[in-house]
Length: 195
Image (cartoon, rainbow, N blue to C red; front, side, top):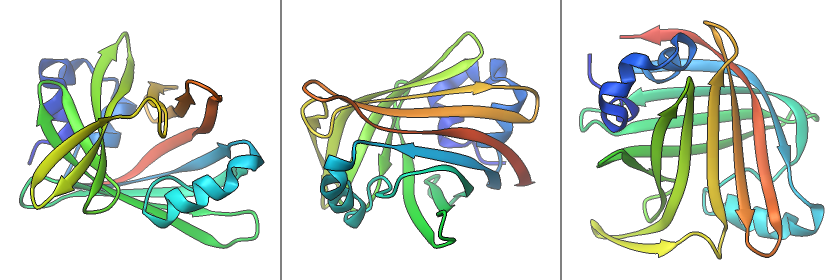
C-alpha cells in the first residue's frame, strides 16, 4: 500500500496517530461521511464567492450540512480530495483539492493547478495540528511562496478523535485585522477503505 501524504509528513509519529484519524488518511482510496458547519460574516460573502470561483473554500454558510469526502492517491503519490456538501436547499456544492508532500513535515494543498497552501503538520497529544505557512503560486512547476497572513489570513486545522471511529475537525482562517473570519468544523467517520 502506498504511503499517504500525511504518512510521509508525520514520519514516525504516524504510528501514534489515533485509530479514527489513521483511518481518515490511510489507503489508496477512502471515503468519510459527516456533518459540516460553515461560518463567516455575511459582509465577506463576495470575497468567499470569488475564492470559491478559483477553487478555494466554500462560499455558503450552513449548520450540520451532510458532507462526503473521498480521497485517492494517484501513481505519482499525489492525494486527491473530493468534497461534496449538501446545502439546506439540497443543492450540492463541491470543493476539490490535491495534496503533495513537500518534505520536512510539510505538505501543499493545491486548490487548482496554480494556487496552493503550504502547511506544516504535527501530532500534539492525540490531535493533528496544521499550521498554514504561505500561499504557493505554481508557474510551470516553479513555486513562488507568499505569506498567507495578510490575505487570506493564517490557516489552522485541528483534528482530534472522539472515539475509535469518529473524529472532529476544525478549520479556521484568522486575519490580522478581522480576526477569525472563516471557519468550518464538523464530525466525520471513515466508512470505506480500499487498499
